[in-house]
Length: 280
Image 1 (spheres, rainbow, N blue to C red):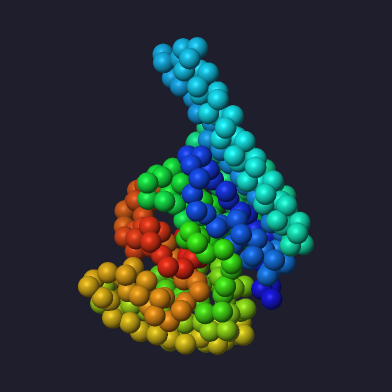
Image 2 (cartoon, rainbow, N blue to C red):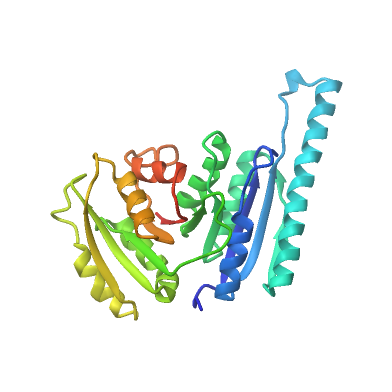
């Protein structure tokens, strides 16, 4: 049983209205069921608008029809999630904001700040708006996010890998993930050597006693970066060792943090074989 995870936010963002294979609702419900957490479903849709100069009766009608369609899709997703939660015995509330994109992002970020964890769908690379939601919640909510790739419909946390580089963000992710780490059967502190200078960083071996004080036994794993690609090294390790979840601090290479994710984070968001627990 996962303890100390009391309230979760499940974000169902239908940016395009196109049917896509998403399992985030089932995954979020599974995690809420295993932790006994309350689940708040934020099923949003973007309200479209045309510049005044382009408005005609025909265009206005088309936009109104599309808005109604997107709103209905979001409401249906919320109703489905509520029904599934009821069957699973999970306390659940729903909201279905239909807002312009910037207001929708602000609303989701505000809700994330008052929840222990936000669960989001891994954004398809073709849908930039979805990726913007992930980045906004990650950078501006002050709370961790759990990003779920398509096709993973059940939370599993038996084996968790913590990507450790000694940074403040890695430390935050490690401690934000304590409820999941305590419930895991195997926790691995994975440090990847060769991509950047870690000589002044806190080594992974010094993390193990900290986790032991929380009742968590951790194994320290040192890897050598493959082809100067940390993300691919983590992907390979996760697949070879049947890791259920990767915990890591989100990293940025630029002061333009709202726009530019670090290469490792960006690469894993585009293609990860397992869910990502991220903090910033």
